[in-house]
Length: 89
Image 1 (cartoon, one colour):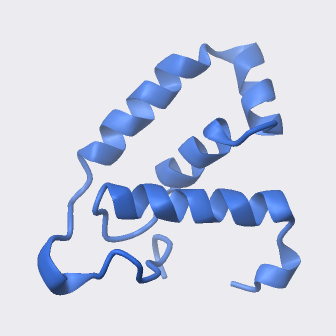
Image 2 (tube, rainbow, N blue to C red):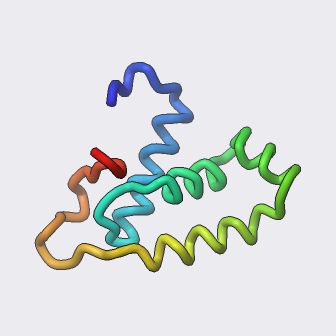
């Protein structure tokens, strides 16, 4: 991944997605992590567009529930501050 080709907002969304995966002890960042990060991003164009077509809070709640059900890594297998990869890395 070449971070120089990303906008600042994109980099923030990827970092937030990574934080979601780490907080939930998930092995990798999935599409749902990035989608939730984009929906929760301040002044997000994605959130504005999505609000026009679907109730946003229900989707956020469903995504959080699905993320919580993802397989977890515990113990010393992955330190909390170590980067994790995107799906199919």
